[in-house]
Image (tube, rainbow, N blue to C red):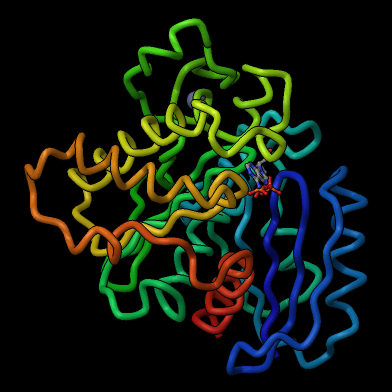
Length: 286
Ligand SMILES: Nc1ncnc2c1ncn2[C@@H]1O[C@H](COP(=O)(O)OP(=O)(O)OP(=O)(O)O)[C@@H](O)[C@H]1O
Ligand SMILES: [Zn+2]
């Protein structure tokens, strides 16, 4: 049996599957303090004696450098109690089986790369536009990372002409991509939750402009074969079209890309991309 933990800033998902990634059981619970959250994780996995490996996709930033003394830690998160938390160490000490460790978005990227929208491709980016914005990338089966993992959400973008009064809400940068275009930015601007705004509201055009700029930058730097867009904001069905239109205008045919409808896509695994990616990560660590 394989296990996976999708550790999000607001909720955790744990799951176990057979060797073919067929999910046998899953368990959702809110992310509270480390003690209570881990208690829920243990309560779930303790029931499965045949567990052979676990894959963790965690919210971050996290330390993925195996030579670092803080390898396996969640590092500089503003989330109280989770800063400098040895997440991987806790799980390894409890279960004494191989544990794969990566970011939540790398895990989702792996799911889409192996069995989802990018399964025919050799490279892929997964970007989530939810409570925050984060991205993971894979080329030829490997996560793209170096000194640390990518932080695709905190890049700098040009302000939309109709958005000059909004300062952004990223606690570190104010008006970085996440500060301007993640779900909560909508409520900060209008006092209404993103999911409750009219699909014809001009905000979607503004968000699409920011996201398209990000995709142009990722395209130019990595030249991936596929970009998969997930997260709550992408539940707005008009967004994909708006983003593609802005993207084409901004890229201005400078480089060749795959057919746009095959290039910028939704996750074919839907909300399961992260947990399935976690199971694949577990399998890879067997
Ligand atoms: N239908 C929708 N339309 C627009 N925005 C939405 C919609 N559903 C959710 N959102 C926004 O998406 C954000 C939540 O994103 P999401 O559901 O991807 O959670 P998440 O960021 O993955 O959570 P976690 O931090 O646990 O990983 C919220 O800001 C919410 O307002
Ligand atoms: Zn930022």
